[in-house]
Length: 317
Image (cartoon, rainbow, N blue to C red; front, side):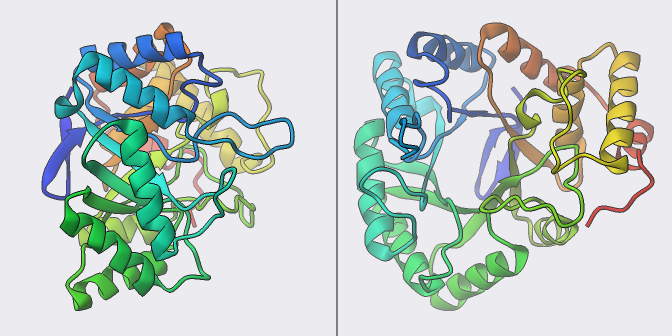
């Protein structure tokens, strides 16, 4: 699998998301999917301390994804060949949301134990915490980097100005900086005023910031819960409207022309974008994994990218 730069290393151009592994995706299937991804040359896997099933009282159990991933790595003895990302900051049973120093450090220790590793390759601030000073959070992250428990740190669900503020603080203090940002992003664009909180959607400001400052951009939920694969599925209110309908029409037309699926075109579009976007994709069965990885074989020329980008004639926010 081809790679792209992230900080001082290179990572797989497509990152496998492990959010549903072990609960929505049964463990035995999840193991097959992990093996399939690695067999295709993939090494970049994304999880979080909070990922796990939702109980009947809606409280988030958490830990399940990390536990399964740790078990798989121990059985395969392959951690040395992988790049593992996990996160801190969201709530689950017994743990409040936030990025206080004690939480950043304490949850890191728990994640290391569940994953069965000594160092986390990429540790994210999962959700921006406006109730804790960025200085407190960043100093804790820096402590983890200096101790060797974390190699790189990243942000997720941050506005561009908050990301720049954090990176400025790190530079002035000599602390580790956020090297990437993971944000909600897909080919479809939310309508003006759509409320996606606490998720933060990629916008033009962030794209420009990442391009200018060489910050890697990763996209979660790139396939929008199956809307591209199922034409009969109505668009959610977040995407419904003239822009979304026009972009879907062009997307499906391009997919037919290139003998590809709409999902593959979306993933390829991200990888051909400026700045380059690393899609964090998931699969619930081996067939979906094969389909999604097929995006790596697509070459979108400048004219195709222009058609996709300008599908509705409307500017993004």
